Length: 183
Image: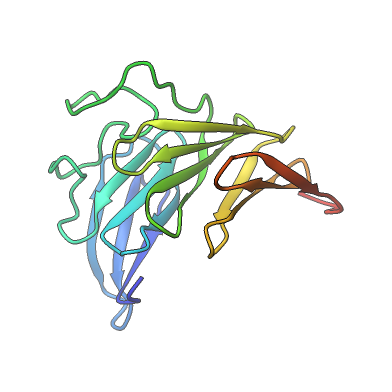
């Protein structure tokens, strides 16, 4: 968020961090088991969320480059799967059943949205990693998700050529934008 570091999702199962001025690598976040599909900074710049093809989202400390539990690799499913390396997790929460394609923090930093190949968007508590809402409205892979700057709406885009709009407070489906001719 301060523009000094660029985070890059990589096919080598890592997130690379680069100095925005010098373009030199500052660090590498390791811990994913398959390619990383998306990265997103929290609004305060303190955390980085990364999504990947094994149905998981990891939360990293942007300064220390460790996961939020203090390890030097991400929580082995901080969102969606039971951790294999310890840490707190509610086993009742189930994650996505297909790759996570996109992740986005809410403008207030309290929530994380994840989009998936399982045709859903899930909303998580950013602190506890607990699933709060499941948004279903697409018939194809959900490829992107974004919050409005005023924290009032969530938009999700899909390979079904639609964009669904959701009320960010009630999670009610507000409408579907149609008309895209191609994925």
